[in-house]
Image 1 (cartoon, rainbow, N blue to C red):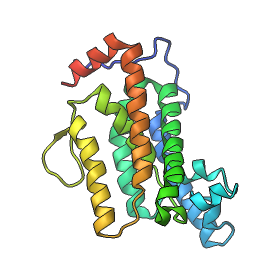
Image 2 (image 1 turned 135 degrees about the vertical axis):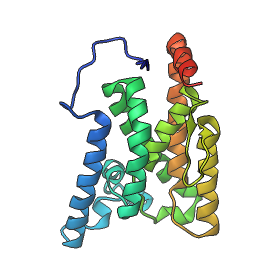
Image 3 (image 1 turned 90 degrees about the horizontal axis):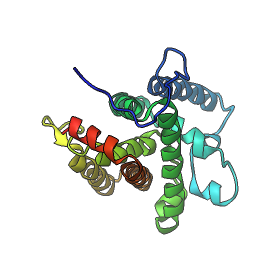
Image 4 (image 1 turned 30 degrees about the vertical axis):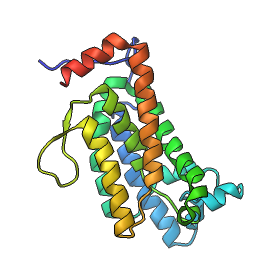
Length: 223
């Protein structure tokens, strides 16, 4: 029998009807991707209204793009990869945290990832005028949390056919993406990923401190 451990000590109420929070986030990402795409293709909105650009933020413009950029992607493949990852990772984190905590944590992770991208663009000239979109910053927040809550959980990373423990997979994936972007000159939001990961690690430390017994039970369950 599989046991599911939740951190909140309170009655669980669904806040999105029959849909889980994670399913709702995935659906929102898909719908908004096409909505934003249509609006930009019709020239109703420009990319500045949707994507996060450090130059705009430091000019005091388009502040809302910290949020909208989390629900836009650079193409169908980008959307598919992020949503597939979110389907597996997010479902687990939602079961552990509960719906309300999961939703809040997901949004905060994405916002902090965006903030890291903007602030670190000051030392990375190529990022200052670049546009960032995607859910991967928030995804790395979830991954960072699982590094501390389920460090020995075996996961599959990209196209590697063997499972790797979460505590090794998370930093390994971050390094691999950094190498790919540097050598192949591909625009990858590495600083956003780093910001999301650090956010997840920070929340994981907080939960391990506040709920030591519950976290030990979760770690034992997934070891």
